[in-house]
Length: 110
Length: 115
Image (cartoon, rainbow over all chains, first blue to last red):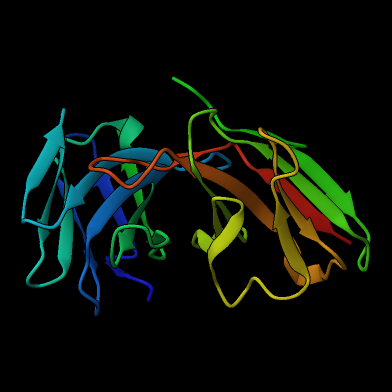
């Protein structure tokens, strides 16, 4: 079952913050976040496992609420390099395929 | 960092022809995947492969598609009779296992154009 991402697109100025949400109608084992630049392969950002943990590195962090089957990706003080399409991928249990949402396009301008 | 390698980077074919897309996963990885992405759309799961057999496949992966690991290093996706709607970027991915924090490593993709 495909996760649902929102919003579809975000336009930011450098330094502004954004939140991208990912939700599923099924119980989740894990949520993965990837960023894809035009014409390139998706690049791994982070994995969150069930347990409601929050992870982060640099100015990008994420949370996972397993009761609500939702994850959110937080981008703070955005930089031009953050531009791209962000995909969440979900696993319903360990060992199943990672299914991606439709993506959220983030555009950061100076 | 280790890489997943895909060849060719671009493939042009005529409708009805067979194509084989090739991938070399990371050497100690055990789980292999094919995804595809039609221009501007989401990354769609096609098939997963473990222990020399398909472990999961999507509705897209019909009888026209097959996967093989012909030797210890290559992982291939074959499309028997290509259709116009098969035009897409095809990504191979691999994963060491399903332990904590096991991410997918994606190859750089093969752009398939069916004319």
